[in-house]
Length: 365
Image (spheres, rainbow, N blue to C red):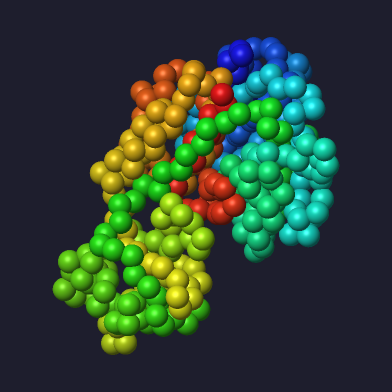
């Protein structure tokens, strides 16, 4: 099958950025993906109209990011547009949008004869129930899989799914006629073993394995004092085990406080007694190691050259961990010059969960 087409452009205004992107993109395809930096959010509608006309593609999905990316390149905090089009059978995909959890559980897309296999989605971080909407939407998919990310914008949280909107969740669902490979990189390395949360209150962990939580943290990271731990801020995180996962999956969350007097720690999420927690280290070395592991895994599973790809990365990754264009360079070196676009998210979506600090790579085969 033919490779997808892609283009990217940056400039002082939306017209020049879009013109560059359109010239590279060319004409053809049935479905398009488009991402713009939030500096161009006010012109998103006009950009899509221009791409519709230049590419001859009516159906588009996409959103806004503080940064966007394409094959081998990243655009951060500058006016930029990236777009990709591919040829899909007309009855193999459907655009949709949900405004709440109930709609995600029962609304379109409703393919009675052929249930949607998976979906590429964009979510609105301003909605407090986004995690429940993601889970409800994933339950509608035959594979249980969603791939995508939350809009990141200093302006409006715009999403595109045929028309421009600010829904809770929107995107495109595909039938099983579309084959993909997808992987997730956490960018972290676990420290020590998994612990059982034996006492907790909301987001505060009092005891792990029956011991004071702060004592366990000090032991795992090799720090003797709370002052030493404070200097590790932004490097040490809590990994919360995913219930029911048979792959040891975990969700990374910030450590937002320690109490040396009461020997407890606070996590940027709700925790419950009986849950699993492990401490993780995230720095440039561990991020690159885990990215390499993910790329090796997805490459080994390929049986041909991908037609195109989507990459969704956390705002907390990018340049701070990989340097300029670092993530996209690693992908290019591992997979070659395949058409690929994406954006830097305010939260990443993989399977039926919302993550942070991750990179989600999806290849169309």
